[in-house]
Image 1 (cartoon, rainbow, N blue to C red):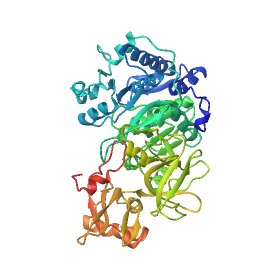
Image 2: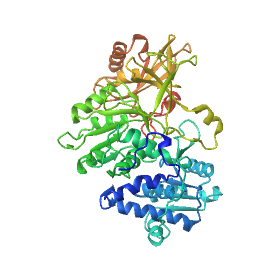
Image 3: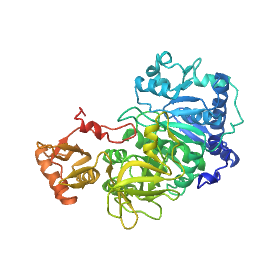
Image 4: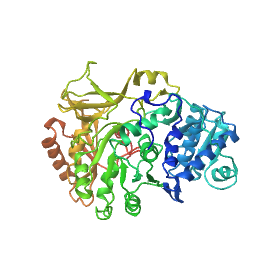
Length: 522
């Protein structure tokens, strides 16, 4: 097992994140063990390391120099970890982007990062047509595949680079762009030390990843949560990871869980809800090896956690992370579990709540959550104003509202810009949503602030019905309003309820409440 780090000072000053994750697996005798399984088959640790070395060598052939950036728009196949780690090994900085964006956003990201080369999955090639002419720093777009000039052919004909760049633990190793759901996406810059630190602080001791695991992450690797689940954590312990190139439907994911004997399943709450609602959802007998699950991206409703536990006998480890902190920093802990809350700070991280006056909030008082820990990003690229507003010295603002109870557990209240004040009293949209989802007739729900005829803000709910519900809209509205009044508080009930086919979400499963507030067609 790789050396465990608890603080930045534990990491050697000369440290390369790629060799830190890979070399110990060969030394431990895992050369012939499958590291990844994708649509083309199994890839051993030896094959992964060779592919990483060949990618590193490719940068020399392309004239890409150390500290320059390359853009990765790659689906979840062996090509993602190979190119990502190959760049890091060579001292080149991979810039990871969402595979569901459009050409305009890719052009912005290419110009913003000044990427020299773009590595693009063949299926996404059309989105990059003509972008070289719009991006003066971009020298080439390399598509995956084995055709002339494509990635497989270039790696096969090229020479591997075995010697890693002598990088510093604190220098930029990679970027992750934020979703850009409310403006231009921001390039979040992370150092070489951060990957292994997330594994040593959370992946191994809290989530419980181990060598014997078969891992499947519903969250894609372009998402910070998925990057940890599918790359950092399994490589840090020598596990095997199953990658899904296509859409994460309950049908496809159910097949993967059963066929490959998945032991660690990681996803967002929306997926767990959809899986449990899927008519052919596996049973514990069909997925006997499943032993661990993590959830992030949105707060996990208690009812979903209870239904999953009843079906599989597995406790979902809910957690809160961010692109800025790279992975989860508040979580249910192995020795500190409590239903209906996010959890406690992961050892190695600290949290505090700031009230409306700027003072430290006491127990039971809603406040803005701030966190400090060794995996905080270095900055937002080319965005100094946002950097200084978010990274407050050692502390990082999360943009989330939380409340802490007397036992030290943190419970989610909503995003700072989603909080409601009704009759002068704070109403957590998440509390209303959780009450709605707790009703048998509701699959999913989102709550936003809506102005009444007098201009006063009240809760409005958007609801996705559960399968087989036959109540009329009018009858169901009456039932749901009464249900929320009884569970949350009389003043918190939704004044309006709109039934829709599906909620608008980001690629990572987060509900896009801003779209609901704008009354867009959903």
